[in-house]
Structures are given as structure tokens and as C-alpha cells.
Image (tube, rainbow over all chains, first blue to last red):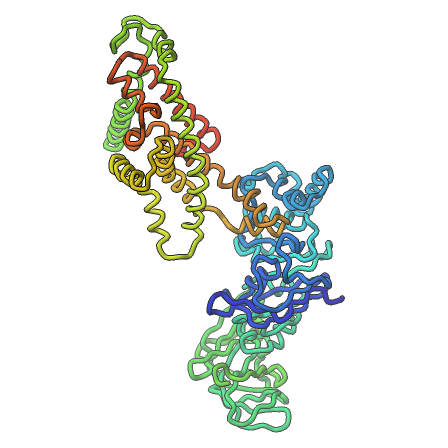
Length: 358
Length: 265
């Protein structure tokens, strides 16, 4: 897959506040990329810059070799599915889908066939003459998708399109939309604050925070090897323990934490404040054969049975908690208050410089 | 249960009485216009349409009717443009004093017409505007603007501006997006504002009275003059025609917007 969209050193300021600061992003042809981050991280602003709905304050946006930076929105051929769908209330479903075709001057006799095909793709063929007020939220969302793909966009942008749908419908729509875009081979950028949604939908995830992309990688890498403490915290659940490096030999550091000494593969000088991170499913019960593993003995705070797995919360000292995700059969008779030894591989220990201490 | 039913009966009675109270003068006017007698009698001894015939032969009527319609149409058109621009500034702008501007533009609705009339008369004399037609037109723009401003502000503040963004990404330039999306979506607001503005201009008396002269008289003023000089039931006929016009306007509004929404503004 070749590189398709280049966002190069793009900045955006609103008055005094800098929303995006020299941000760069490269998306491959046919790829589905998620911009994942908390509200206010600049992900929607980036989307609007790519769509041409906002002017950039520096930097360039190049799509398929064509510089879009100075092109107005209506000449970019970038489709957008808006968060509230932004369907035209004075038009029917079919007229909404035809709107972009009419605006582009597609020959009149060709329009009905294209509209019909696009509505069929989103399973709304029978709804062409309805008013958009007669549709459910999920159906409105499909119309918005049909309207955006009817113009055969070079790039499709989706701004939290599922946020207004209930959970069950949302999950069905996620799978459906992903399949549809794969079939059509459309390159898409998807904005969301829902990490699970980003995991399900994307080929790659760009984790954004405060106007910066902290990590840009496939979902598995983002989950297993978060590049920053923010990515660790924002994506999935994890145990996070602050500590201080007490020893260092070659490729391993020893970190003093409230839960006990923990080894991690990294290079930090002694005395450096760090943050230790462990994914809950990496933690197992210690069985006496802990070569190459970290072992700590902690008190059980709570035990949560969720069917397919058993979650154990531990007191990790200094008010911190550790979270382990086990098979329900692994610890059948654990009760809050018990002391248990838990272990995880040194390789699975994530370590980051402590936030706020340089 | 009993008290609830009693309450319902009571409210229905009061509502009915209010409707009767409001409708009686209108019904009386229409009945009187069909009398054959030369004086206002009720009920008419004999029915005839002679006063409608007489009305059309009063030479002063047509010029003043044409003047009123002309002033109402032109002032409504000007108000639509100015009021819309003003409403956009108030709803979308981010500057201090937006609310003050809105209140100021709408204030002619709350102030006594005589006060506005006297004030404008003094102002016009001061700046040397003596032409009756031009004075009337400016005054009527002031009268009609609040209606446009109010309805357009209301519909604009409900307008979803991401529709404009959507139209732009679908291939419309910004001006075209305004025309293709904003204009049709706001059309009910424009229409309602224009209808009320037109009617307000048509029947305005207290402000117009200051700007008329012997050759430039709007319809309400001409009618009052008829009433003073040669009162006969042809005035009731004219009033009936005006009532018919109002009903027609409301009917059109209902067809295009819906009475419920008209009442909302």
C-alpha cells in the first residue's frame, strides 16, 4: 500500500490557544485510520482542516499528490459524515443522497441510478422517498454515509458517527461500515473518543492528546506497546504504579514502587522517577517458577466475576491499585482480604518517564 | 374527578367567551357591510351588496389602497434584507452589545406608536426629509423590521450550521450552500416574518399619521377620514375586505408553515 494522504507540519490556533502544533500524519491508500483521543485533543479540528472547513495556520495537506492546503472544501472531493449527520431537513432521503451529485453537475439522467445503488449499499433502498424525520437514528446515519459515498470521495472523514446510537446498534453499524468501506476501497479517517470502537474499526490508530499524536500504530501495538503513559492510560485498562529507578544494569532497570521492587527492560539512570504499567491479562498467579518474572505479594481488595473472566483488584500500596484479569477457574476461592502472589513477565512490564517530572 | 370535570367545563366556558368577545366586532362589521340601509343598523333590515359597489366608486380609495400596498411590499422587502443581516449578526456574531442591538431593533413593537411617530417626525424635519412618500417608507421599515428580526432570529438560532459544512463538502461553494440549504430551511421563518410585517404595515395608523399629506394617504388614514366626513356602511365593506385579506394571509401561512408554528413566533 502506498502513502496517500500526507498531513505535513499542520498547525491550528484559535486565538491564543494552539489546538494543533506541527502535526504530521501519513495515511496509506485504502487504509482505515482512527484518530483517538479525549475531547479537546484536536482530533475534530484535524478532521475539519483535512475537509477544508477550517483554514490551516501553517503546514500542508497533500492527497494523492495533490496539494489541498489552499483548496476550498467544495473542490477537495473529501466526503464527511458528521456527528449529528447534518442531513438536509427540507429534502427526502433520495434528495439528500443526490445533493452532492447535483452540486457536482453529474448528468441528470445518471443521478437516480447512483442514488439507488448507494441507498442499496446501506440497506435503505425502500426508504428513498421518505422524509428524514421518519427515520430512526441508525437509518439517518446510513443516509449520511450514503450521501458521503455517493460523490465517490477520494477520502472519507467520519466524525464520531456512532456516538448518538445505542450500544447494540452501534456495534452492528461498526462492522457493517467497515465492510462497506473495505469493499469500496475507500480511504477513511475516523474520529472517536471510544477506544474500543477504534480497536474494532481501524487498520491503524493515531492516539492524540493535546494537539499531538502520541502514537500511530496498528491496534495491537497500541494496546500491547503503548508509546507513552497517556496512550497506556487512554487505551484499555492497566495497572499504573509510580516509582523511582534504584538500579540499572545494561538492559534492565529495577524500580522501587509501593508494591515492591519491579524490573523492566529500559535504560533509565538511577533515581529517575518513572511510571510502571502492566496490562491486566498479562498478570498471572505466581506458581513458584518465576524465572524472568516480576512477583509481588498483594492484598485482594475486590473480586469481580464477569462470566468469561475474573477480575481481581489488589491494593498496590500508597492508594494505588493493581488489576489482574484471570480465567474464572484459576482462583476459585479468593476472597477480599486474602494475600496473594501475582507475577508477570519482565518483558510485559511497560515503563515510562513519570509525567510532570521531565 | 368531579372537580377536574368542573375545571374543564370552566376553562372551556372562559375560552369560548374570550373567542366570542374577540370575534364579535369582526362579525358585526361583516354583517353591517351587507346592509341596504344608509346607516349602521344591526341586524340589517334588508341585505344588499350596494356598499361594496359604493366602495369601489369612492375616488380617494384606490390611490390610498395602492399606496398602502406599495409601502407595505417595499418596506417588507427592505426589512427582510436588513432584518436577516441583523439577525445573522446577533445570532452568529461574537461581539459585545449583540443583545442590545436585538432589543433596539425590536423596540418599536413595545413603544407606543405615537412616541415613535413624533420622534421620527422631528428627526426627519431636522435632517431635511420632507417628502411624504420617503418618510412613510422609512417609518414603515422601522415598523416592519421587528417582525422579520424576531422570526428570523428565532429560526436562525435553531438552524444547524453543520448543514452548511455538509453542503460545502458535497460540492457547494459557501454562497451556494447558503442559497441551497440555509434559504430553504429558513424559508418558513422568512415567510412568517414577511406576512406579519406586511400586515403590520398595512394597518398601521399611529405612526403613518405623522407622515401623510393631502396627496399621500395610506388606507387606514383614508378610512378614518371617510368615517369622519361621510360615514356610511361602505367603510364596513372596506373593513370586511381587509379582514378577508388577513384571513387569506393566515391561510397561506398555514398552508406553507402551519398555524402552530406561526403562533410560535
